[in-house]
Length: 432
Image (cartoon, rainbow, N blue to C red):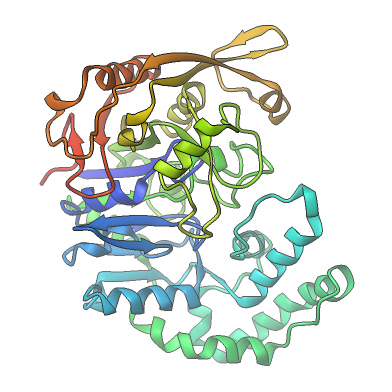
């Protein structure tokens, strides 16, 4: 049995999509377990870029079955667009390659409208949401009034559920946000054209399929979205996403037990980025930060927004290792640091004159901390053409070792570019 969870160990955008794609070559199943179209996983194969928002990154491998679990929220219009684009590329030719849980929550146009209205009302206190309707959809699930994927195929039941759902939302639209009410007939006309497109991919019990695959000793890869520090319970609340981004969610959100998991791989960038509002201790509001942004192409694949950039934050990653039970790390975008004469590493924080080596437990403290930065020598050598670990420059190796020693967790994968072939393996993780 080989089951692996891949999870972001920073604020998202770490490079999970690439690692999932590479690992998927040896996987039988790739399972997306949380989040929605607010995620953006960029894959580069032979120079061709594919950006995925909902469909698991294993879809580029025709023999890998992709599953979207019950813990996800589905923007059905975005899903259909994504399916059509993949088909146009010659991918997803077999509908059995994609299985979507009937129990997944559906995002409808009014969820996105509510998301945007709330963000506009917050003005200067914006959360930094993508406006994709993720939060309102998860609220419906917690409030026991969500529309599930299976509901779309029973028109009578769907109308009743929409009526119940819109009763409260229309009060918000009209009375609080000065927006016109949403009519059921409008919603039905908006989604009717996509329902038939989704029909071939729906699955009543994806959890049972995953459990049977694990029992049959198939290789199952669980794909997380966003990052640990955006977790709704343990992230920089309220500047977080609306789901649990942690490895433990892979089990609860897909319907399998925690004892079936054998490995957890944490994905980290060689520096740190963040999109949207919220504290960011190592942020570089400077020419250095802008250089990281430009050379790392740090612009959101979902929104296009420029990402905030800063040095790597080791206490934050140690926090992520603890929360997820990470067994191995993948270090991404090492090549982006190649032109820096010196490279900063945050090894701790100062708070009220006291040295902290652990991640602060409260947002109040995190907003006040001053990062303790140690500087290491840069290597001024292009890494993108390296194909062997022995060819990594000495100072780059020292940087990798410094990070690994401080974190106490093995770095088993090193990425030196966006392509599949630009991946160096210290230790194989998912072989057949």
